[in-house]
Each structure stands twice: as C-alpha cells, then as structure tokens.
Length: 86
Length: 266
Image (cartoon, rainbow over the protein chains, first blue to last red):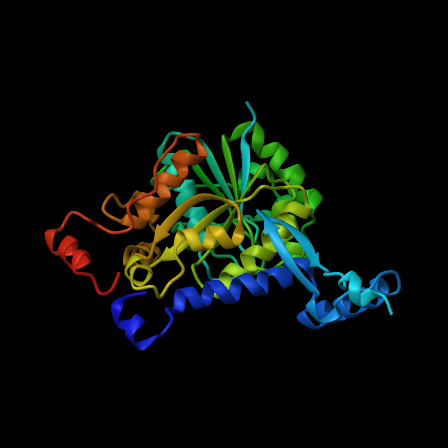
C-alpha cells in the first residue's frame, strides 16, 4: 500500500481481488457453498455432542490447503472437566 | 522420436488462447522445429486468421476425420516459416462432429511427422475441451490477471488433473506492468499463489499483438515487441531451456528508475 492509500485507508484493488479469489476458489474446488459448510458444521456438532461434551460455539471448521490439495480442518474444544460433571 | 502434443486451453474465452497457439508455434518453427497447429475450435475458426492463412483453406479438420481428404491435403504451409503448418477448424459444423478418440488418432499420425503438435482448444469445459485435451502430452493454461479468468483457470486446472493430463503449466497473458506496480492488477506471484501450478510464461500487454493480428503476422516474429519476446521465451522453455522471466518493464531509463525511487507510493 502506498502512503496515500495508507492515509486514506483505501485497500488496493489487486489485494481485494486476491482475497476474494482465495475464498471463491476454496468453495469452487470443494464444490461446497458457504451455506452447505454451515450445515455440515451443525451436523458435525450434533454427532460429536452425542459422545462427548464440547463447546459448540467455539467449534471452528475451515478449509486449509497445501498446493492444490485441500483439507477440512476442524477445531473442536471439549468442555472443561469441572463443568462436564453435572 | 515422436513429436509432443501441447494443448493450449483456458476455460474462459477471450484470454488469448489462439494468439498464444499461433505465436508459440511460430516461435518453435523459427527455432527450427517442425510444427503443426490444429484449430480444435470447430464452428468458431480463428487460428487461420491470426496466422494470415485464411485465404488458403480448402479442407479442414472435420474433412480429415470424416475421410473426405487425406491428412496432408488439410495441412496449410505457412508462407513465412516453411516448417510451420496449420490444420484449420471447420466453420460450418459444431464440436460434436469430432470425438476425443478422433483427436487421439489424428495426433498419433501427426506425431510421426512433426516435432510439435499444438492444439488450440475452444473455450468452455464441454466436448470441445475434451476433444482438445484427449491427445495432450502437455497442457498450457492461458489466463489473464483478472478475477474471472483466474477463477476459470482454476476450474480447468482441476479438470485437467481429473483427466490425468496434469500438471498443467500456466501462461499469464496481457499483464499490464504499470497497473501491477500501482497495486491495481494481480501480480504474477499472486496468480501463482492462488492457482498453485508451475509457470510457463508471462506475456505483457502490448499493442503490437493487435497490430500483428490485423496483418495476419505472428507477433513472435516481431523482434521489437515485448510480447513477441515473451512468446519466444516460452518456446525455448518448452524445448527445455532455462530462460528467466522477462523483466516486466524496460528498466533502462533514468527517468523510470527515478520515478520508481520516488514512486507513487510503491
């Protein structure tokens, strides 16, 4: 970003293009819309909750990539033991 | 040694597939290789026009496949480069007139006689694309540093992998160095980062491309054109030479160096 843009806080259009493309390519490659990803997340939380106590609001599911290989990475925090006991 | 089939494709239309095919072919021929280009864009014939051979067409690709002429009769020899040939597309038929198997058989014949067989793929991801990709030993994906072209390139790269024709290599066409410098066009590194494939070349935007297309002469034969130089470099890379990327701008001028130093914010 140049000094003028830094002053005005305006983002360069190439950076904007790259950010938008990064997101759209992830969903294109996985053939999964953001809405379907949300549904997947809800179902996953429901299934795991049947077996173990988790913190549903802290669950993170995102795509990560290495070259052209894609991974679905889930971060599922368990509820602390103290609160697990009723 | 049998020749190599290089398919040039893109997904999106209008990014410069035909220009790239004509100019890489011309550059390879100028380096002494025996080259034939095949226009696989049936119904939307254009490679003949870019090469300036449009008035010499008698038979076309569909005539060969349907047995109305011998392969040799459909080959048009270039007027400037005696080892460059064209097999034109049919203009009044559609892509279903040919099958992927037809293309494989055709290229098996061409491999015996030519060092390089360049196939100009139609835009899109349907039959025409599958025809063009079926005989490929190597694939070049052409894109522009623009959002829609990069997205379509990603899609086509995925399809090439699915057909087990990968890894494709990328040709970034019509890059405007001044816009990249100002942060208003995706840079080469940005596109490579997004698409995660190897680079075959970068062709800068250059008025000489249009001027040469107007005349029906390949810009690759224009010694002064930067786009022409870029296409010549691509040809040498295809032959296995390690050719560094062209500096995107002429950096020799003092004025340019000064303006960069005190630059408009970069």
